[in-house]
Length: 143
Image (cartoon, rainbow, N blue to C red; front, side, top):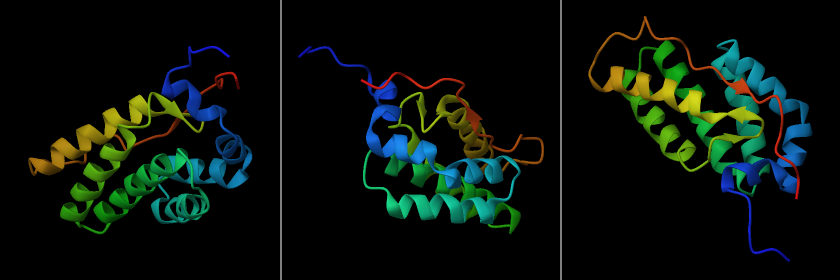
């Protein structure tokens, strides 16, 4: 048995729970809803998966869920709630590597940092692009 292991960001999609989640049509639907800005509906999808998940993907799902709920708060005029949730989402997503569950996480974190900065400095957010989940085209090999 080799003592060399892949970095955490390449191991994420390789465990059996991640494989199950990647095959679950609810994940693809939640991602699609997120990218269409249907925050409440995607929140429901991510939350359902999050409740069913016990492994390493749990913080990632929670971070995605928090990012969606933050946008929902913004739609409803609750900047303070959005600020808190974006900060919490970034904290969770920071520990998830470069990609997970077939999603590129670096662009998402970059977008959320811009939103957080604008909210913390009470700047307008109408010029910011909505957060978007970029799907990876290939998954790392399963070891």
